[in-house]
Length: 193
Image (spheres, rainbow, N blue to C red):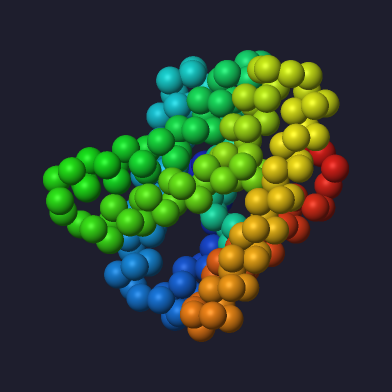
């Protein structure tokens, strides 16, 4: 069952994600992370408008937010690169501005975390899509797919390893491990991007 309001589609998994985050974390941290996520998506939306594309749908699920564009896929890998990097760029720019001003360190940290994490070269994260677009500009699409797939698998397994270390050595929360498992499943699920 999903809820839809215009171009925004809300899946029950998103409510579950919010509930689990609030239960295992704090409401203040959840609000800051949601604000950082909003900044991220607004960065993507600004790039969509800058390139003359139109937003078809914003999907909110247990895996986060995903934008779908109207019309044909991008015809330019440089446009794909811009669309992929615009979300993390918005987070990192806002983190730099707030760090320079010296206010809201939690918001600075959340934007840094979200921006840097999304730059990991793992598909379906923005960094994985950007790596594929960049390699496609420089080499053949087949080579770009192979290299992107290799990076996706290696970095997703690294996230799993770091998540296990954090859980075992620091008795931390399982979030990084769960994210790593999800990324690994996505990167090993198919042979194509």
